[in-house]
Length: 244
Image 1 (cartoon, rainbow, N blue to C red):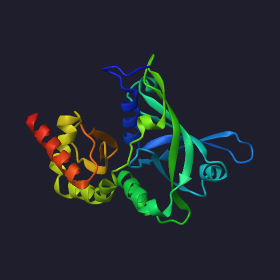
Image 2 (image 1 turned 120 degrees about the horizontal axis):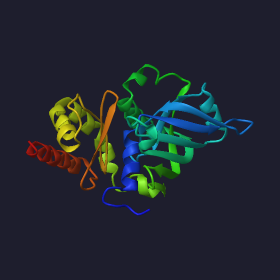
Image 3 (image 1 turned 45 degrees about the vertical axis):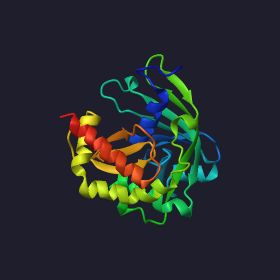
Image 4 (image 1 turned 90 degrees about the vertical axis):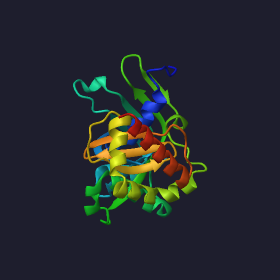
């Protein structure tokens, strides 16, 4: 199915990945190979891949360590009939996070799940990232699409400077620009006024959260460094104020 004016499957898949905070994780049981499904919390890597913080005492973690093939179901949690909402099934492999990326994934995960601060240092907990090899999107009748990773993941090539600037940018937005965050939410994304926080930035947009509610603010153009990010956020704040 080709994208239309009212349905862009790649954009919807990216949005679901960025906004989801829980999902159903399917792993393969050690020994038997039988399917096993569990509910997990998640956050998003800058490229959009799901980040998990899971205990080695959990059955799903033991399954992953024996065979890291997994699938992950995410859905919109739409009101009414849940089958009316969009959902996506990712297939891929769950890889334990390397030491070089520990700070990045920890920061992004705790931004999405602050309560995990209480156990993130426990020795049995580890971060994993699901590296997708494909996705199956169901967005209603006749809107069923298979997607390749390049269609829903964010290319981080050339954005190293942005990733270096991201921690400071997130802290700055949350400490000094909460009014702008609320303007993005209410005037650009038609959300309710709330204590919106920035949980992460990447070349294509910014992730926002207020309690259990999440939003994705897409940028009209790609940014690749801290200066471009600042200019983009100032520009979008101006556009939001102009909607008064």
